[in-house]
Amino acid sequence: MLLYKFNATIITIMARPKTKKSREKELWRIISEYIRRRDSIDGYSTCFTCGANKPWNEMDAGHFIPKTSHSIKYDERNIHAQCARCNRYMSGNIHNYFVNMEKRYGRKLVDELMAEKGKTKKYTDLEIDELICYYKDRLNNIKEGE
Ligand SMILES: [Zn+2]
Image (tube, rainbow, N blue to C red; front, top):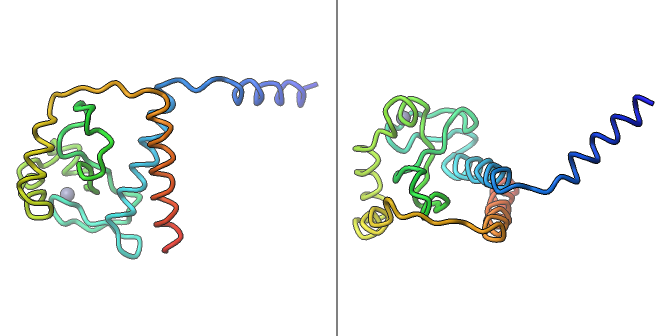
């Protein structure tokens, strides 16, 4: 009887349609892992803004233009591995972020990303699912290369 009840619960959870919120949560979980692994060598990521070197799973994935700018929220050029100190306690360590963005990508891209600041975009479920597939694929490529 108990087992029956347990199975019924699992089926209910699995059958529940995905909400936009749960889709976006899944997408961010995948992007965050992808970014932190992308920015790592032998399992250690270097903080984009202070150079601290830590295991990738102890790092954050931090945005250059804050996450509230929805149009580039999921643009991987706007996200890099950051230590918790820079990302959470120094509000992204934005001065160093700017300097290092300019060094890595050049001023043109920095200006392009900054022009997106404040622009909003409403993602459709399909767009979110496509991004999930895209970043899952990128993440799997990295994992296979390890
Ligand atoms: Zn840092």
